[in-house]
Length: 215
Image (cartoon, rainbow, N blue to C red; front, side, top):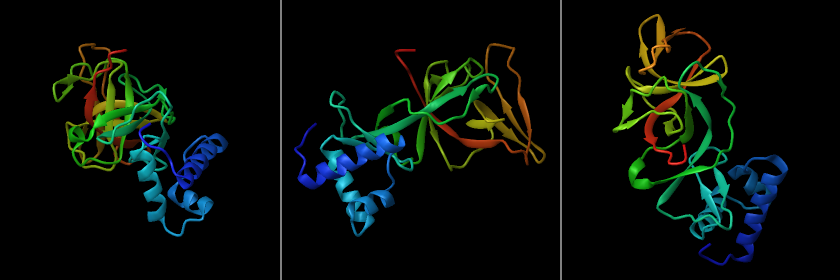
């Protein structure tokens, strides 16, 4: 930690911690505004910015995107914390798409540019091991950085939710169907063909692959 907290900042941090303990997730700006009796959301943001600058929290671009920093974890102003929400299966979509809290990817802002609304996933399987993004293969165990609500073109790598399970594939679309196709040296993997009006969801576009030295 890099700064001593004022009494009010200690109160804000205590409220965030207690909310986590009671609910299992971070409070929203509106909830903090109500609990703390602050008249404007800008006032809440000012406190959060101070806590982040002093190294007590990390804020992400996600809704409820507040992460409390443990005493032995360093945080820097020039890093963006991207929450790892679970696994994306590079194979048959069998990993349930339940959001989890698997920690944060800390990425320098310069690497991300102005991209927002980001989350991270961990690759399982080998159906995309012949595809590269910026020179990095989508190998099992690597991290994916995914951007929600962005323009998706044919040939992009996407995260799709099929029958409630997350899968990562390249995408191609025509007037009738969406094709999610593998790019692998393992011939067992085949495309998935979806009706354009199916209940499957394209959850975002993979914009970055990060090596995982521990994989």
